[in-house]
Each structure stands twice: as C-alpha cells, then as structure tokens.
Amino acid sequence: MNKTSDYIEYDVALNRGLKLLNDDKKCIIGFYIIFSINAGTRISDTLKMKHSDLHGEKIILKEKKTKKVREITLNKVVKNAYQKLTEKLNEIKFNYDDNDFVFVSQKGTVYRTQSINVILKKIFNSKQLQVSSHSLRKAFSKKIYTNLNETEHALVLLSDILSHSNLAITRRYLGIRQETIRNVYLELEK
Image (cartoon, rainbow, N blue to C red; front, side, top):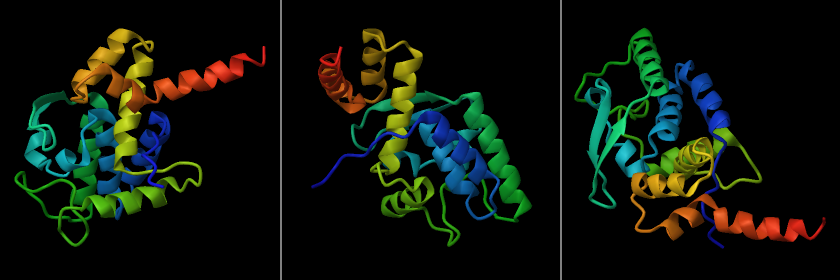
C-alpha cells in the first residue's frame, strides 16, 4: 500500500534543520529543511535554487508541476539560515559561486529527490510517520493554517499558495476531513 507523506511538526523540523546547519557534512541538508518548511515549494522547484536566488527579499519561480509563476518572500528564518549556511560553507572551504545550485551533495552534484527522501527518513527516524520531502511542504501548510486560526480564509490562501485547483484538495492535503471524522467518533465518548 502506497501511503502519502505525513507532515512533520514545523518546530520539530526547524530545530532539526538548525542543528544540522552547524554540521560540516550536513549543513546543506539543514538548510534544505529550513528552506522547505518556510517556502512550501515542491522538491522539484527547491532543488533548482541557486545561490543568487537567495540574495534578495523574494524568489520568483515558475513551478515545474503547474507551470504557474510564484513569488516567495524570504522571511528572517530563511535569510538567517542562509547566512549561516554560507558562513559554514566558507569555513569548510566548500567552493561555490552565485550561479551554482544551493542543494548539492558532497560529490558536487545536485541532490536527487530519492536521495533527499532517504536522508530525511534517517534524520526524522520515525516508525509512526511516512517522511519524505513532501512532509516539509505539509509542515509549511499546517503552520500557516494554524497561524491563521484554521479559518476558511486560511484555506483559500493555502490553496492559492500551494497551487491547488480547489479548496477540497487543500482540505484533504491538510487532513482536515479525516481529522473531522475522527473527532466525530471521539465525541461519542462524551
């Protein structure tokens, strides 16, 4: 049975990313986690990021899957993490320039989706959760939904941000329907 990716709690992912950001061998993966939970991009778009993309206040990207143009504002968490990443890369004498991709392995090649997913499974080492790169996009989504008080407005914004074709997809993506059904059963206990 092919189960979809579970979401990881935003704070858990952030703390793990920050810890890895200080590791000489895993700093790029640490930044990958931090960037992903703050940008909400699909892995196919994240892996295309170049250092020059992270110098401004925002990123403009054309999504590979939907072909839609998306603008992502870089928050302080991403900016600070990127600064730490560049300091770490300079410290370990990892050569790069602005035109190079950010998410490269120690072999100097851009990570593949499969490789990132294997690494994330090890990092989050959970028997209960199905962890993948998409788990980080879901962490981003749940954090926004929660921060906006789980309102219909939050769903509309998320649907637009995630490039979903309708709100039903966004609800299912967030697990709202299943959560509501579960709560109906739990209400019987009262």
